[in-house]
Length: 314
Image 1 (cartoon, one colour):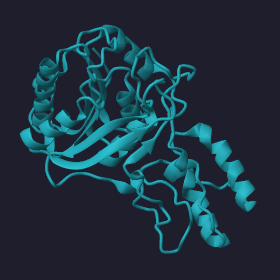
Image 2 (tube, helix red, strand yellow; image 1 turned 135 degrees about the vertical axis):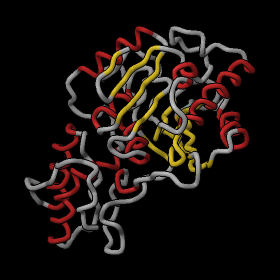
Image 3 (cartoon, helix red, strand yellow; image 1 turned 45 degrees about the horizontal axis):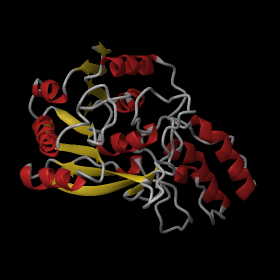
């Protein structure tokens, strides 16, 4: 086990490790279980028979439901073959509250010669009760057009999320077959938890959720049974941080029709803090885009602490 005060990586089976946790002790669970498609995770959890996989799914979901707080949220990634069964277990068997069926759209994936190539994964969002955390201001995206009646802080990102895969040429690419983008994970963490909350990832794999929690001030317990992936998580958490490895391209968007100089100045001073925090590599292009669109300098843009919205006037 690797750990510091707030981030723990525990080697073991998800059901066993969660079974040792207290009831209603976790604020957020983000789970990316094997899809049972035969990928090599160094174990047999992705090569089960149909009924065995559903039994495995019921077992870990039962523990996840038990440890989740009453105001907690569960996000689960799943492929098309089992997503309907997953929904049924969460909805009818565990009687959790459905909130959103999120489509993660990515631009590159497996190619097919017969049939259409897959370009998305599904993410189910369920809550334990009708009372749950959701911090919309933390995950808004810039408006396409500025209108006085709109919220200057931005729009709801919707349930179709476009983040590129972490390509093999990316310096943050880990030795894991299904590594998820940090920007994708960050949206769930920001929307459904607060600083200091406890996030559990039962299948932490390459450590994306743990890395995100480390940078966003959340506590995290990541569970992984493969010792080589545990070691990779350790290295990743110990490495210098230079920014999240992915971004929703809408975060770079500068609203059209910001024609009033005073309104534009107020907006631009906050854009980096609202939308580009933890995306340092996007700042230079943002500054160039502002100059191209409006001829303004953005030397005074506020790139301060992300997530403190109480003092921001909308």
